[in-house]
Image (cartoon, rainbow, N blue to C red):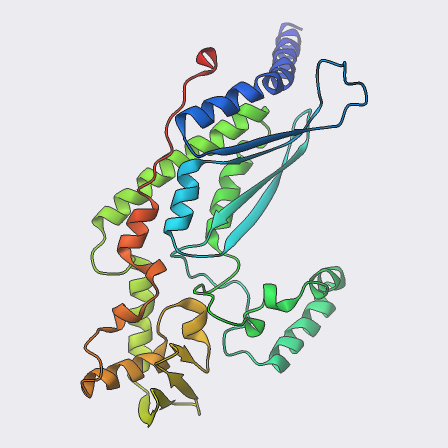
Length: 318
């Protein structure tokens, strides 16, 4: 019975903290803004028909820390990944996080940049057979938003899903059963420490590109050794290789008919053959690394993580 009473008392205290943290949420937000200039934080409450009522019911909160804004802009990429997890406890809800894509090249959608429309339709039919509900959900979304075979223009990214979202998601799950401020603080502290740890890795990196981009480019160089390029004038090359793989590379527009260069921002095997031929004929003195999009440059990576999330004071000093 002593254990039962102790557990009951602990749960009661926890419930008080769950509710009590909502009353200090505005103070927490102000502390974030004070210590991290440029932070956007908005609290939305449920509408109250009686304006004389002194309190309001919490609805949602949005936070974007100032240093993370600057880091995202410095990364020179336009894609955001979204991932969410459900909150547990007496006040259930959902935490939705936005992650800026950069330097990761994981591909989780099996339609590659050279996938044809017919192959895309076949993949959709297979999805319908496996899970009709999922198929119906995907079908109503314009495919140019999620399938690379329908992309147009330069994406400078190799996938719409990556392990960055999952990394953040796994961390958030550890805090999803905590009171609101405790949960938000767990996420802020995790990001604060992550930026420092990534900077330590970037400080040790050498070369013009990030380590991941360097390994991808080296792999593309190895594949390009099996290809032959023929200059066709107007900056265009016809590049041929094994398995009847033949593409047109436009060095003026920085495009290739396989679309890999446009999608990733890293020269693929076809474009590398053209770059080497230009250098051989003294039409260009640059190395392949100079043709990589600036989002993969090591100096861009370092600039991204140069903006640090500042620590904040404890609740007694708010």
